[in-house]
Length: 104
Image (cartoon, rainbow, N blue to C red; front, side, top):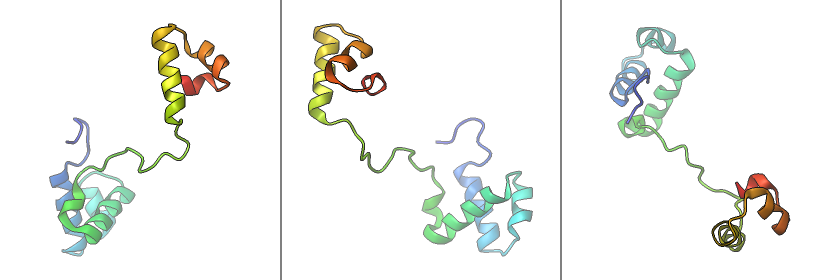
């Protein structure tokens, strides 16, 4: 679902991409017609050319992987100290030898 101020809804993205890919419009002219920047129009046209109409939906911004993720045993220690001993991030970080921003 697009947010209220989105320049293009998935349906409008599809129309824009079809103008560029299927009908051969110049990217700059199609971008001007839909009141978006040239790179935005190019992005949607490239996605449409690569994956078709299904690519016009919003993508998740969640990372595919988190290599620097805090290990689960350490997370359990943090949660235990938070709930059982009612300590804050700075105190927990001092006890566990880690950055307070990680505990937050």
